[in-house]
Length: 519
Ligand code: FAD
Image 1 (tube, rainbow, N blue to C red):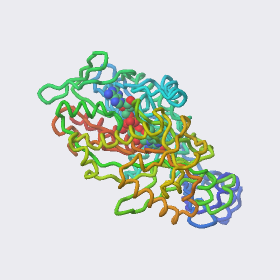
Image 2 (image 1 turned 180 degrees about the vertical axis):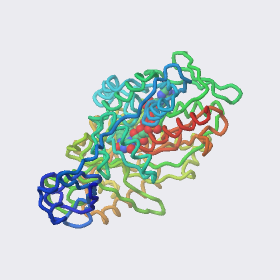
Image 3 (image 1 turned 90 degrees about the vertical axis):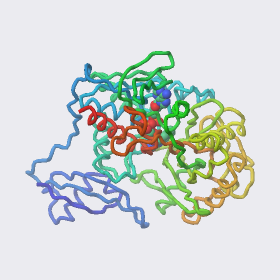
Image 4 (image 1 turned 45 degrees about the horizontal axis):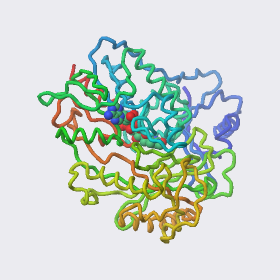
């Protein structure tokens, strides 16, 4: 039986197995040669003090002990070619993990995705970055893997259900992610590694008898007597099934409009909106690690900050150490930012959404749009930003202190946002209540994180797709839509997830409920 230990070591020791083994031996008062293997189970950084430590939980095996095989295996998926079909609209994390779960439960997923496969999608991302052309079906949000593919691939969630999280992480490892994601307290995969994992998931879905249709935008949900009958695609093709998982993400505005038009119950939902701030990574390292240089053994530092400003929460969102700001518009005529990083997080800049919580009352000027009021509020800001920055994929940008002091920045240095920036007073992009909170909030951030409030930080506007502006209500037990039998609103777009892991968990949950209802 291995001995389980929890202890702290320096980053240098944590990074080198021989040093770690030596230190464990010292702690246990035994010779290093008596220890066969230190199996690290969990690792996290403790940066609360100047001397940074790594917390480790490990199993220690002594010579002669049998080392437990912890290899991760995929479930034994059955072949579902001739089983009951379930339509899954959207191949984001919610849709893909729903499809895998359906197969495990002996049902046949037909995944219908408006965008292209990961490879085809890459060309369209290039076109956004280089030529400022946004394809409405293939972009940073739409296409195989959904918004999760060309993302940072951070894999943590505030979900308290650790079991569910571990299950998703283990499936990701089964499909090729590094087993390190099971160990790190804040795991991430990186944009360079995600596409292959997503492609392997798709290949498994097809191999076990599911179907995956790309470039197939759903334009109608077929309903008779308040019960789902299937979907219609943009080319007129119809697919029939009595069960439909709708996992179209927070940017599928046409789906929200379709539901509203068909008088299928949807509700406006509060979300958060703001800017994406970019600092030199070295500055964030200095602030977070209280050091001049990070050294060889610590990862580029992340940060997380929240303040109450004028009674509202202003906080960091989807922080990407060593990352890049991405153009995430889903239609021409708008600009939207978000961030990603490669697996090594080795870019020179750190970026984070800095957003302010919105309330339903903020959408009052858009009340005529009913449940789409929040979506129209969001759209308005994205379109205004587009016009102010020169009607390309360039974004309005301003230095952080200049923004707080209402000064247009004389010049904006080159940032990681490839399409480029235009110097704009960002107060022009947002409603005044939001601007005021952000102007004050950045000053407060600077008081908590010394050095954060600086003109070396460049704000890009807007960060507007933080979560869905709409909720599609569902029965909390059956997960079926409140009015439409067979319709399962799922994932981030329906308002039940906020990130890759929680979307994947929600996809699995919907699949389980469908299997239960058919049993
Ligand atoms: P989505 O991933 O949005 O998937 C929805 C899918 O539905 C899309 O593929 C879309 O093309 C398809 N679709 C839409 N309409 C239709 C239609 N009419 N017909 C057919 N298909 C349709 N989250 C994290 O947890 N960690 C991160 O590090 C992280 N970084 C991010 C970085 C970027 C650049 C972006 C854009 C997002 C990031 N996110 C991150 C958020 C995360 O990607 C989402 O929370 C997650 O992908 C939501 O999953 P989903 O399946 O619910 O929806």
